Image (cartoon, rainbow, N blue to C red; front, side, top):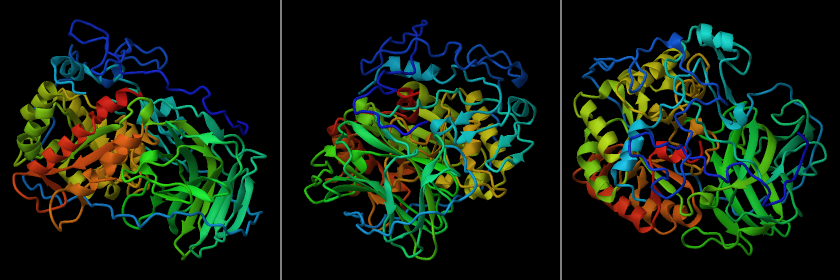
Length: 610
């Protein structure tokens, strides 16, 4: 694909509302959704484009409601010793940069061999509840593995249809395979986020004209034909290992209007061992006036959005802009002073001062942002771990405002100790419009986290969890990683690749930027966790979320998809960062309502861009 700059306002994929769409089949479902948007009549019908048909090899029995094999025991086992530690809370990133490095030191020459993986209102009435009750089964019984991720390239398995049907083998970047994985009984429906076409694009093909430099650049190649995921090349740079800024940049471009738009970055870091941070600058006047996004701060211990040898996609929204300089400014609520007239773009990388980092930049693009569908953004309120307090203390507060939640459930915990029962889960789903999603099947898998298990163990836990959800009438095909960990398994298989075999999205607890529509990487959904109204217990204080310039203000002002991750509720003051009081939850919900931000489950939110 040749290098091109599409004019602002050009055609893009996603202006139309795809919806999930429910045709009126006697269930009283409306032909418009609860916001008055027209629904797609095709959902739940055979999809000739995907060729999905029920596969008799799965052996599902003839259940007319769901097409599933009944499981009278629900496939769960009781495990009294449910001792799980609290999920880790990511540390707060350092203060953002306000100005790009003006250093030079442009170098050329070096090439790196090898390729990485390719880079994918209110609603209180019965109508929405009925729709949710029947949602999620259109095209569910699909054969073999699934493709997922950015551009349909970065998460692909199995490598051949024959391998899929025979062994469920999973194709890996290096060409090796993990054999013996069971073919999923319930593969994802295929209703993944549609790829949004760019209205302006720089793809770093021959003659792109961007400069590579900065005092932190040791060597570079503007035309790297060895590592790329589009066209025939990308731009590459290697840092000095001294912690200074290395950049790929361009100034004096035709003016860009980013009103109602976001930036899309596609890049790769060869080895992240010495990666410190990544920053993007948007400006004018030769970078005299700039806005900046610190879109990645690398952790030595927690799961990272950017991992070695992978093509990564990041969306930069106005809700995430971190700093301004020169004539540009941010209001008290985080709104930028201008959103158009930009001529300068810079992609900057910093190593940790202890070693070099090689990175490739494939694309910088402009695409429509979340405001094109939701002018004030969307909040999804999610709860991990199936705690009884979600039903007893959380549900009454949310029911009062007609707000639904998403619970990511651990199958083993259901019906034991202080955890939800099957009947409570069904009541939440069928009577209050909540979503019952997956978190793990076994207690032991959740406690350990998937990154400490083998690929076969993780895949089996995924399979049993999905079967358990379907067998019990829970329509969600969305998932949250235990402890937010989606790194590689002990035998080297990326956990998000395994998740894609069974679920349509998977949520992390990374929040260095907020999620968007459509998600940049649906198997690494970002979420803000550790929200609490306690004192001196760590996590994310409620005041930070609801206060001036906090996440709710930025969501309402600039639009994004703010996914909030909560755990347990308390009647009194919380004692840990994974708890929030009932009063604190009520205060949070009132602040969301005051800003007129839509509240949707993850399943509902995804329907608009599937």
